[in-house]
Image 1 (cartoon, one colour):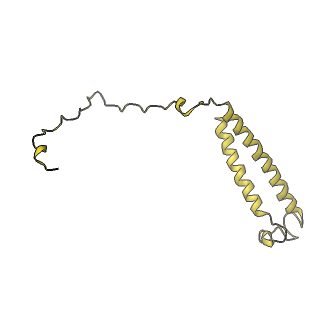
Image 2 (cartoon, one colour):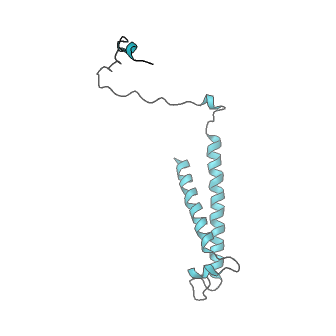
Image 3 (cartoon, helix red, strand yellow):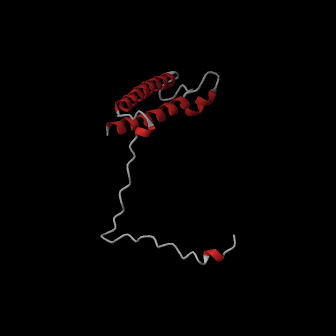
Length: 119
């Protein structure tokens, strides 16, 4: 159960890192100004948004690293088969017949007519 929670957190953090990296503008590229990061009257000030986005990206990158380590630890603790041949395959459950008998295949047809067919 905890492994599913860590995996879900890992995926959300990865999406957050991608989003934050795309929001930041690189040197010489003014694409970030479209999101208001270059404006002096923005929410975080003239350079505040760059620091905020950089710090947020660093925090999410650290969380991504930790969840990666956690998922690796969970996988290492799980019992592993030493070979593909050692893996257990679960057999599907037999279908419920409701007490009815399963019909058997019919007997082979008479071969006397099959002899008349040219090959």
